[in-house]
Amino acid sequence: MKDLLDMHMHTIASGHAYSTMREMFNAGKEKGLQLIGITEHAPKMPGSCQAIYFHNFKVVRSGAYGIDTLMGSELNIMDYTGKVDLTDFTLRKLDYAIASLHDPCFSAGTREQNTAAVLGAMANPYVTIIGHPDNGQYLLDYEAIVKDAKKHHVLLELNNSSYSPLSGRPGSRENARTMLAFCKRYEVPVIMDSDAHIDLDVGNHIYSKEVLKEADFPEELVVNTDPTKFKAFLHK
Image 1 (spheres, rainbow, N blue to C red):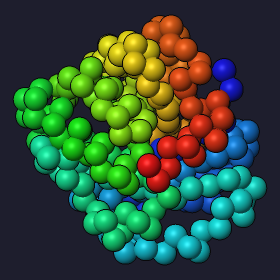
Image 2 (image 1 turned 180 degrees about the vertical axis):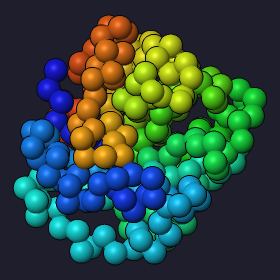
Image 3 (image 1 turned 90 degrees about the vertical axis):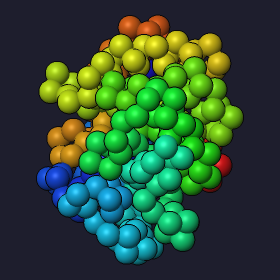
Image 4 (image 1 turned 120 degrees about the vertical axis):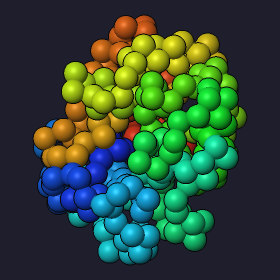
């Protein structure tokens, strides 16, 4: 499978990552990627940057480091309605956004409450990707999630970090197989992302590829094979 993009990564601006933007760009180029995205954590994540950080992306010139780049954010889903922690004014300044459940920002509820939170985030017109939706900390109705991903033209993520032996997200591989079965049934695309917090991990999708193989998932439903597939999801 061609693997040409990685759209979820963090730099030192997120407060708990360890490489600069330049180092991430160069790592993507060295690994043969054609498109990468920087997605710093939004402000409610402890230690991350404030909203003003996302207001000046005009100074980041795509292609200046020899690789096509997009600038986004990993938003925190804040409540059971799917509210996120950047305003529409700021979201309009992003190329795209990932919305994720994180325990410093969201208290797990029932399966129905957690599912409602993700469905609400997917309905947000600025959200392009749901980050690590298979995290077992948050019980979800995967059939409902997949069907609404198709309705709202949102990508569901296979987060390589979640499947690592060092991961703190329980049950991710098993939940991913359940989710992928519904994605296959309803023909809903997915994206592999590294969730890199250091330049060494840019483009690292080794565990995600294992999960795809275990699920016998069709290559044509993986957007990493062609950057234009991903760009078709922008500005939904």
